[in-house]
Amino acid sequence: MQNGSEITMIYTNFREIDKAGRIVISKDIRRHLNINAGDVLQINADDSCITIKKAEEKCVFCNSVEGLIPFEGKFICAACLERLKQS
Ligand SMILES: [Zn+2]
Image (cartoon, rainbow, N blue to C red; front, side, top):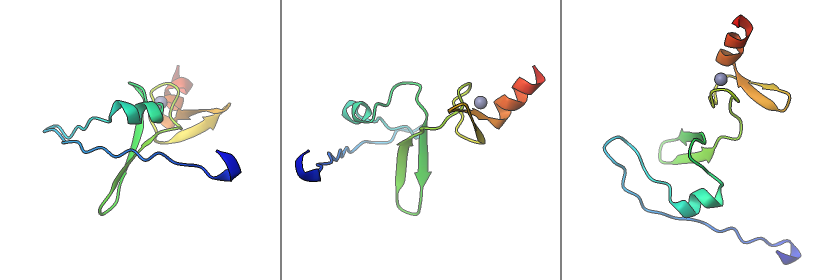
């Protein structure tokens, strides 16, 4: 945008959670955030809010987001690293 101002589109959806605890993230939000099937989402909760964020950092082998170790601009999780060492 001009003169440094930027308009941020805010997406608001109301969705019913199903018995298994699943919700649908609408196509417009998925497209906006480039979220595709198989992507890992990081879900955080505090006393009143849940935030869902696309996990930018994940293991290149198993998509885990825990125990990540950076390597050559990618990430590998401790479990996969251990398996690599043993193979
Ligand atoms: Zn892994």
